[in-house]
Image (cartoon, rainbow, N blue to C red; front, side, top):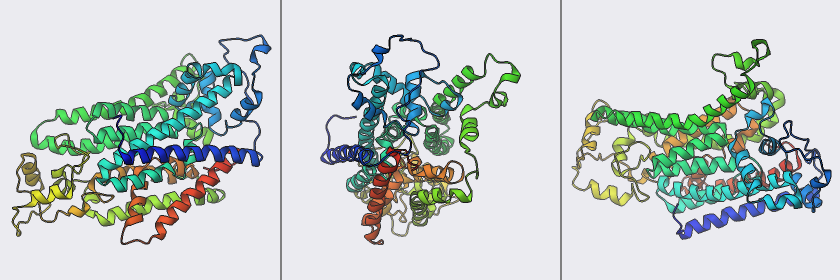
Length: 503
């Protein structure tokens, strides 16, 4: 990441920092004014395996108990698990549902940077403080990566700026300022996609693989590599360079590797060394995946298992973001049907010449200024006005001519106005990924988590930014989007921080 910031990048950093300040302020205000639903947050029984026994109770006293209590009161909902794992490791089977990256980071910082604070507020409060600092700082850098990725994909700095500011004040903001894994996941997934779009594949794979150590849905980021590999396979078939496909497949495997390694770690700790009749049911399955068992057994996650009348309020809570996802996908499909339904293969004829479909090929140059209208127009000079290139049986020949660098293959049906912005072909893999995530949120997981589950999806903010200035839509959509975000920020900071159900 370059150290020199552009003016718009500075605006994004200020917006991200200001939004975190607002969230933390709201959390403090609501905790002061509202009584929590559950007051058990400060409870902290000893670890099951105490490697450092401390028989002297006087050593456990803290100098600032009031501050310690205030910090520990913020350990609610899943934060309890993350802090407990950082303090004691994986003690119970259900704790393996929480992936290790955030607990490892919390443990490291609490024992290094923030270790001098332990005598003042106690170990658990320092663990919580480490989690707050990690997540809020990670969010600020995630916002910066979001802007840089948006500039590359949208080819429009102003649209990228609007989308980035929306991301800074997204409806799931409370989770990005709490001890949850959303901030680290967003930093790694968005950062990985930025490096992938910038043709730094090794760094991209590393970031995307680490995102799978933060949240389980990080493994779905392998879909971007699969999309790229699909197009590379077509290129390789024409040029007989099959090593390109092999390299792409290996990168995809690398993204799955950390998650698989963690499942193996759980199998080693829980299953090995026990007799068959003492083993947990999942240990005996053909492919023992601990994560799936925990989600189904302890939290009732499964296909259509949440479709119950009593869950209707949760479906209503998730309806705004699910509706926005649905509208964004439908609008893209209706506006670019050939690109959408061909999975970008027709875009390789119309836009890949100038590097628009940046995730599809290793052999076309990529830059922040690729796919500009000026470049397209200049290359279209000299093309016969009656030249026509039918899409279909002649696709392979046209593709071959593009690869060989022939300058006369740009069809007249190329629409330069769609070569940038939300309707760009570069947005397609992001739209497909978001659609799969939304379907998973609606049909499989607890639907109320959709707000935070989908909050790291760039197309949400790109589409919102597009709506705000689109001549075919009303300004009221822009106002509605901001009202929705503000309402969920206020509601989330009130309910979540006081242990009331939210999302």
